[in-house]
Amino acid sequence: MMWFSRWPFRRSDEHREERLASLVEEYGERLRRGEKIDVQTFSEMHPDFARELRDLLLAVDSLTEYSEFVEQDDQKPTES
Amino acid sequence: MPDRDVEAMLRRARSGDERALPQILELYEKRLRQLVLVRIDPRLKSRLDPQDIVQETFLHAVRRFPAYLKSDNAVPVYVWLRQIALQRLATVSRNHLKAGKRTVLREHALVVRIPGGSVRQLLNLIPGSEDTGSGRLRRQELQQQVRTALELLPPLDREILLLRFMEQLSPHELAAVLEVKESTARMRVLRALQRLKDILSDADEGQP
Image (tube, rainbow over all chains, first blue to last red; front, side, top):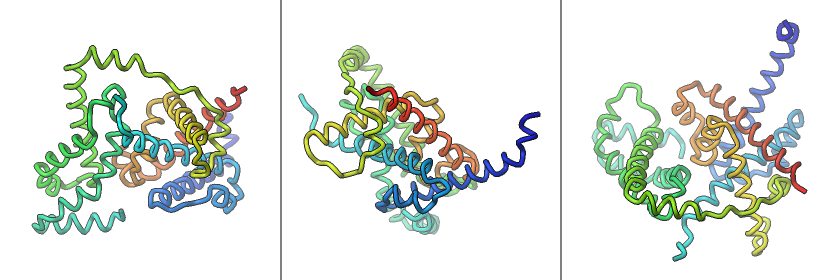
């Protein structure tokens, strides 16, 4: 019954994850609206999550950049 | 595009304004094009013009729009357009692959992968910080790392990240596509992103 003994911690872990998910969503939405956000600054505004949030947001940035790369790549003239 | 603007256009369409649908389609044209670019079979990239798929999507959307407006539990309008675009892409791709199977497969075998760069470099990359030739090359290498990391993810995680960050679906649209509550969709995005981050970090530790 390991999970039961850890129950109070599970609740706080879940709450933390939900908060982290909300922060990732907020960042993603602001990016989607075309806002330029500094990952470091945004992460430091939430010190409880700072390191983990920073790494997640950098992964978001890398996906966004990859998406732009796919788009730009399509606009290059095709070599014959 | 704020949802309320689209809602206003839909209300106008329901009251008979024929200018509403062209405006809605124009709003989503860029996103649909991006969807095709993300979803197209790499073997067909040089053969299919994404804009053709978008135009076909528009033609089908015009025909089906009255039914969409009458539907009682319609999905968000972009999700509806996206479904049409994916159907068109699947049909056209199937026809192309059937028609030129041998040639396409031979071309695909010639694709050369760009060698990987350091993932630490990726994680430290500041967008727009370099515009030199070597900077551009390095960025291309890093894009390849992201692509490889995406390929290593479980299919559902990859799908969620594509939907959210490459197709740029809003949380509301994502929830509609996944047919789950928004809070559930949000947690799935987090889990998928955590796995992607782990793959990128593992690859980074494996670098010399």
